[in-house]
Length: 72
Image 1 (cartoon, helix red, strand yellow):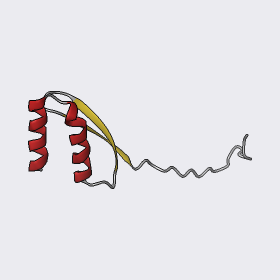
Image 2: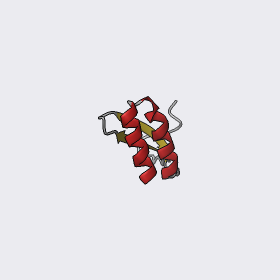
Image 3: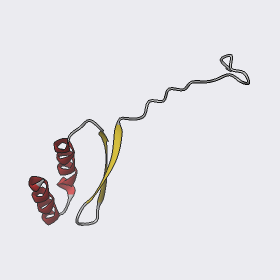
């Protein structure tokens, strides 16, 4: 459909930008994890998700990650 748009008409577009942020975390063992996080979430929320993803890491690396998270 052309919606009645012709030459010399002005079109006003309203774009809603996403409220999601793409955050990439690189671990000490070189693994990268990508998170899509709502921009209004806080750091505690992100730390929780990093910790949940980190459960599959080798044991020593998981301990290092946990210590880092506690220090933040």
